[in-house]
Length: 313
Image (cartoon, rainbow, N blue to C red; front, side, top):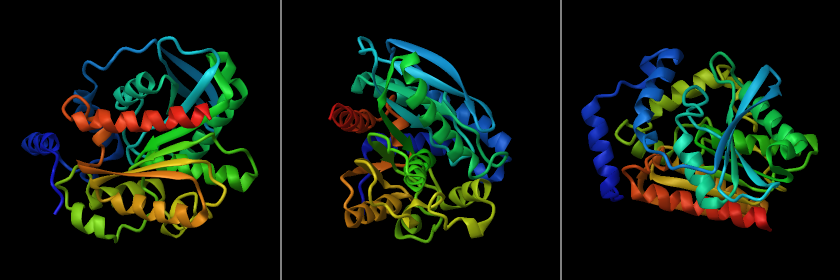
């Protein structure tokens, strides 16, 4: 039986005392407001960075916003990472993931461009993916305008954001377009199949993310069950050969753990260069928890180091 990190155990105890209601009992609008409230604690006293700038860019459904975090002393132009926040394609925002992006930019010395993409159910698949592709294209064409080297742009994302980052790589491959320099995939949702050992072990609601919540997220993002086998929805079904170097991380006590483990096995068979990490004793969403979870900064430092090395290659 896995052993909980003692700081993680205390976080779960405090959460249990709050008596949080499951997101699937709410409307999407209510769930977003609740996610902002719950995640405010993780973004108190976030570290300073050299500069933060919001930039608007054209998207397929209207203007999109990028929040660009620049480390102190960053070269201009310099490499950058397009970051796609998690939240089941339904909740979370630039603000809920502010602490992650600030820490990543300071630890990596890279600019982090966090994307405010359209979300389900108002904008189901493929709208969020289309927004990610539009943002990547804009950085490649206009990155120099905001200090970014257009030829050295990586992608990263957590949970649903990891799904979108990997789906973007697969979409670029289908189009015959260049891949990002690299991508970091953090406890990603790579399949709509929720009948897995990790869902059975950790999906009951005691470990931050539950299987019923994932069902609800999938129903918002891809309401047509018949479309969920599409590789751009469930990247585990895709042809992974030819993808860029990848960082794949899983949390040990996470219903999505098997998604990352299966992805690592598929990447090995496809001959993709990748690093795999299983973070022991922690749950889904752990990298948001730096204020109370020292392991989160260790994890973020691993991700930052991988991105820095790959973008310097």
